[in-house]
Image (cartoon, rainbow, N blue to C red; front, side):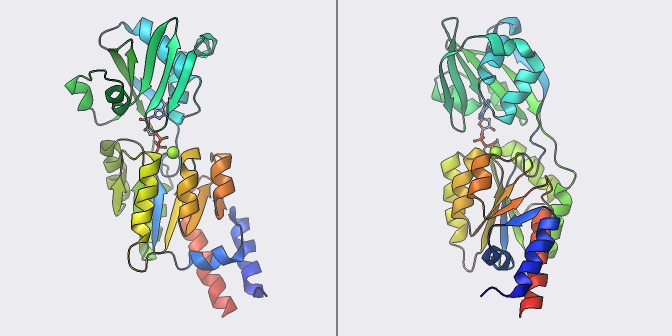
Length: 286
Ligand code: ADP
Ligand code: MG
């Protein structure tokens, strides 16, 4: 039978917006010694805004509406920023042969032209030459290709959540190590990791690379690993970690379904709260 203390713990957690899908996870949470976090939507707001636009081989008036039309077919937070900037007209443009290439971006045909919108990796994959000055950019950008030409790029920015520094500090105070994983570029990941003093951070990861990273981290001696994420791409990693935690605020259904613990607020500091409730519950039980 389940000791009564666990019900108290689960109740205390739910009042803080933390749902445990079983009392065993409340106990396991007390043994976690590394918390691995997704960047976008977990530590940052996941709401991007367009900052700057630069054209290369094609005028902006020509490529930007096509890029937005393509992005209007995606639910990625980066895509939302581009569509919001260009406006409602983006939805009305017909896109044929649309393809979403995981961890790269989008490809489609608009008025007979082949349009690409995504990251530098996507351009390389499709053999579009990327100017050196664009490769050197350390911010998050959407690069656009049209019929084999480098059209231009859109700089976008996300913000670190107000709660993120407290979240990381609280874990470190509890002797829990922190790691950040992201599909975003390493330069952006490094800036966020430095601001939050996260122990280790890895960028440029495809969804399958995130799985490999978790496998590797789990192999560490005595490692008990929690992963915190919110995206559709995060589901395999949530399933693989010892405790999978979904941030429910903006989270995808797939992430919420796969997770062992759901945080219903958008506060990453609730991770440490969940661990503290687990520790307090153990003291009552034993
Ligand atoms: P993460 O959620 O960690 O950023 P994703 O796999 O969702 O990881 O995305 C990885 C990268 O792929 C993004 O940072 C972006 O550069 C690019 N990307 C993915 N989808 C899109 C899109 N619809 N438009 C532009 N870029 C995209
Ligand atoms: Mg994500």
